[in-house]
Image (tube, rainbow, N blue to C red; front, side, top):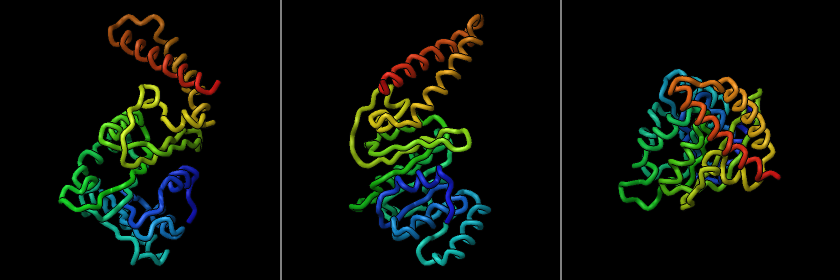
Length: 236
């Protein structure tokens, strides 16, 4: 199973598990690869649209894994049974949608039916607003244990694995990732340099801000520039 660099990085964050729930599975490449590797014993491939599920079913059948990977039409985690999966994977969606799925699925994640087993790990790769995702899971009793970031086709993709636990994150850690900063990740540093140039360009364009909206945007950009500078100081 050929995976893109981004998908290989996401797969590497999935811990050894009994059952993986892949939300928004699309082609089901990730669960197929993870089952083939022996990283997870079985998986549930879920998507809100029937088209991707038809493709997923075909690929699962071609891989001969129909008895180990189930396919379900599901809005987020709604079709997942309490206690069924120990790892939930959500990759390739916007940050707001990722948070919405986690909020709607709290009953599944926590297994509120009283059973002892619940989801133990989250593997998340939001496409936007990743700081909001970090903030949400941190407030819900999840601790980010591993992070990675890859540059693919000119775009940066941060991702994380979280486990049950508590960790208060600073504004800097929420923005750029606690583990990425600790490890002085080279891809994160490249992202910081690019972001700095982008922000400086925007600030220059807003230099003569006149409307209240422009002034608010300029303040927002300057605040982010300050945060970016603090992040770059970590690498010195």
